[in-house]
Length: 463
Image 1 (cartoon, one colour):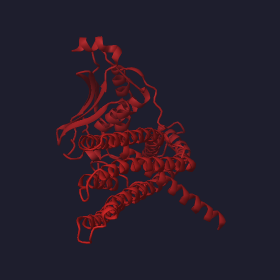
Image 2 (tube, rainbow, N blue to C red):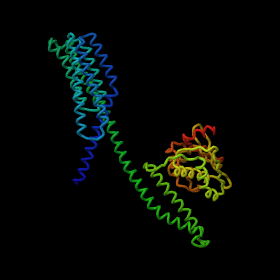
Image 3 (cartoon, rainbow, N blue to C red):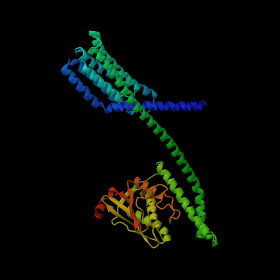
Image 4 (cartoon, rainbow, N blue to C red):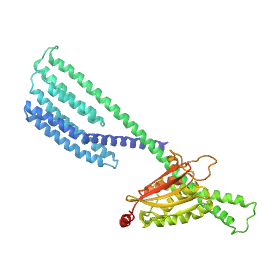
């Protein structure tokens, strides 16, 4: 029980610190964003006041405000660079924000009050309006930190009442005078600013709570994803070792290396061999997908000959093509072009695309592999004359565990992962993969890569 309580307390403290950190960064973020807007307002008010009143007080107060703005910018850089999640640093930043808030608010109020003192009784529209604008601006933009907002507004409100009460104290006017009207109007204005402050504060806290909920959900999803990935990786590795042994034994039986297989057993052993291969392909695809999603897929980039890539890929799939009774034809580029990539992974890409074309072609048909130059890129194409792909099926073609034909009577097997893995490998090479297809007339898959920079002379000759 004590351990559980300690964990809960630590988690609560972490979330509290995380919220304070976010509030501090939101506060300095809006402070930095609106600095030019504030400076334009301060400068305009200073120029106007200096023209109609004694210029000394407005200029001095503006200088103090300008110094607080410079300090705000310096503090904002320090807060944005803060990444050690130290609660003492959070308290330090909050303390400096409070100090700077007091200096800024006092300078603004001194500026406003000095104007009011130079006016006659009841003629305080300009200073009161300046103060009202400052209060509304604070309510709209300083609600991220409640202590700073409350302190700033408290200083403004004291100045509001000081301006109108000075006239009442000086002249002792009757209750139906303009001075008392200004006093009661200030009460209304103060209530309005407080109401605005709470409205903006409520909206901000609602947004903050929703963001925290999303973060918590993200952490739970991330943890579940990590568990799932570890489970898939562990199970796949544990399955692959015995399955490799089983598949090897079945291949030996099917090849006759262990003696003649009785005719009655041969079909069953062949079926077992095919299914063991499908399981091995599924496990390998799952491991590849898990590596890609975890960012653990390793690549060795080097210049590669496109002609050699096409030749080796077609040679590797000739046996599969012959078994299906399909001609696999390679057209090598002349002159050759080069790309930069990982040979093993691009061979995997080519194998997936070529086998996909072979699976969906009829016996006696042909599948052609060729390339063409498109601008400064090379496009490797695999063209078949098979059944084609329906419109609006792109998500199924490149999706996970999806196939265009999901029926129980589909003519080809597969894991539904090959083309998704292929797409991710191609994109890791800064390439693109897509296809064009018409039902009953075949499909052409094409993969585009940037031509390796050292081969620009060959590119010019090819064009």
